[in-house]
Length: 363
Image (cartoon, rainbow, N blue to C red; front, side, top):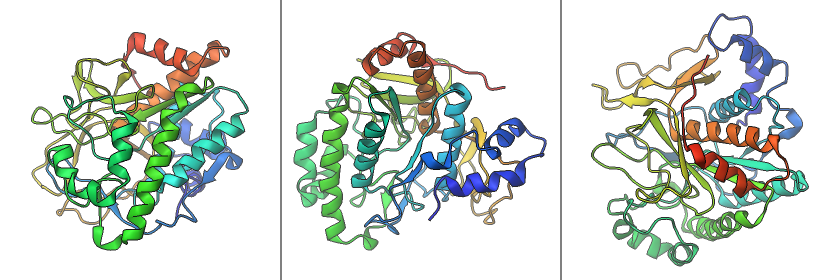
């Protein structure tokens, strides 16, 4: 299985190409993006490795798979572009199949806080688990009903449709999208429920750790203007900064979940992250606009008409999603915090929320 180390090792082959990120490729190849000693893997020994997880696009079709390792590389590059002097660490918590062992996520957070030794730390959580709630159904989430739901795996399945309004029976807990239920043993389902409770309790407690700020992607489950969901976990948790995506100032991206409650955005922000357009090929997702970042794998197949992945000759991609709106806020948080190290994470978040809808122009 690949961690961010794999795409970092491939970057050198793109150095010297003429493209929009040629300087960034050279910088990353020189080891200036993230140090090898600050790359940690919480997936290699996971009990859930090999379990598949797929995300459905706005048309309800399974999206083609993409490199999860490049997802991490892309996000790291965005953060470093905004906060070039930050001390960046990358913890791998998503498998190549898009699933997450929540025990691993909890351990990664715990280890990062310990290693920070009281220094300011911003967590960028470009991931999501549990289904999103509608904007009128009691957000922001409270820990108690989530625990109640997760403590009984069968209740999680049985109540899923009532809870969300519409949900496939095999969806509730893994990150990213729909699971291949036939590949998941009941024992693993119980383990995921237990670990979900642990990480939820941990995330709810971050607000009491003054040197920590957590920023999380809201999720890409919506289909505007037909349907707009609230954020997934962990973005829905009070005192974490949930981040939605916009296609233009004041305009939500068609896929973007809400970053917080619709009428009470006390802990939500957004950033320009592009959008997608409907494609005549229902198995394809057509990119209309996106953020430019480092991507060294071949591109996913573009629907049934082009089943062979297009070759990547430049080490760059344009990508859209709340996963890439979140690191814009994370980079800005690092900049705000570096200006005054004695402030708390909640104070940094309050500063960000004074101008909560961010527009950046990439050069």
